[in-house]
Image 1 (cartoon, one colour):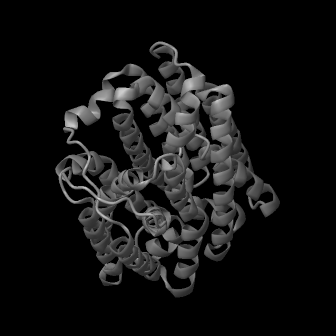
Image 2 (cartoon, rainbow, N blue to C red):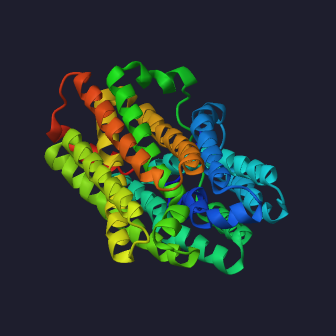
Length: 410
């Protein structure tokens, strides 16, 4: 068995956090350059949005399979090889002169992300000193949220200034920086105990877990309908250009971080069911407001921005109650597998949101997006209620609170 000396320096944590930041930025950065991609490749904005769909589908399908296939591989080599492939796929984007070529490169980047991101969290947990695992995982998670606040606006600005292909090149360069940090700072760790695909999917056999995951899919579906096509929605609603979109993405990212933190507190105090119901209700109200503002367009920013902040805060309030219930319903013996399935559920919802949102955009126009997103939130609330009805024996909140606080961040 591989053994290692636990490093005392925090540089390894910086390397892993930067890697998470890079991968998440690459996943969401299309939001800010979607109109430019559509114009540059002579496709519709709905078709350009399918680049998000494909990325998310590949991650959702391939992450569990990759975990089985690479179970015995060196974690350090897995991280380095995955980031090398990821960087190459992004740096090759200037050579993609057609939509199919860009789609192929997005598939390659998604395959790398499906391998690297779960490994980042596994290595973080393995390297964290006793008593710091929760905080270190939260630090890496901050890399994901930081991508929304810093990475996506930065990519949007680069795209506006130098063209949309430069956005992906920037992602590739960030990948190379992450790779260098990983090689310098991250030691190898022992691979986890082997687990077959059947064992990883076992929590789906519990109806309560299945309903919670379906609720997560529906919630993310509604959110990604808006997030993926935010540029055409805001352009039609208030004439907001790509340069103005970058600043709004910063504000909505900050609102999302605040919403996620506040949601974790509500989970501890009032329980996951009430927290999820509140998040779904606030999200639906924000969507109703956006639909109303669309009907009165052109709208002033004073009406649009508050609704966007409420939308983002509500959307990022969903993960803590979902993951808390997944942990409780799956039980301690299947907790890690259930959390992995929760991540896959997010990618499934993202792919469906980008796909169905593109269909709505093409058929009914951007004004239909808030209506569809609000309907998805109500569906998610109903599915979460079915999970509660099929719940196993009640879980004592006191013993679970601290574990949920740490796990919900991952």
